[in-house]
Image 1 (cartoon, rainbow, N blue to C red):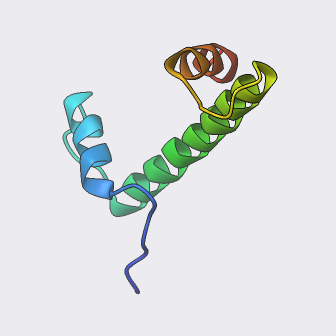
Image 2 (image 1 turned 30 degrees about the horizontal axis):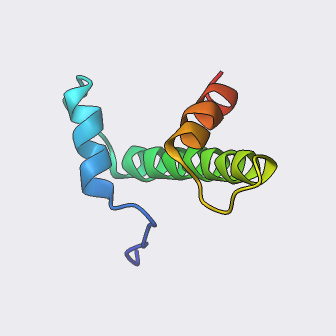
Length: 74
């Protein structure tokens, strides 16, 4: 099986799973976890950009990320 590249390295996210208490994690579960995290991050980024534009800014600021988190992670 060819090695699949991901936009976020698997190892740091695997450490999150381990820190949360997982003693063993399959390779498929690691890849799925990365896919989920990337999906959430993309939605968060899109919402933050919308909020910055709505405020008349091109620069995404901390407040946009915080507000987007409230919207996306309800």
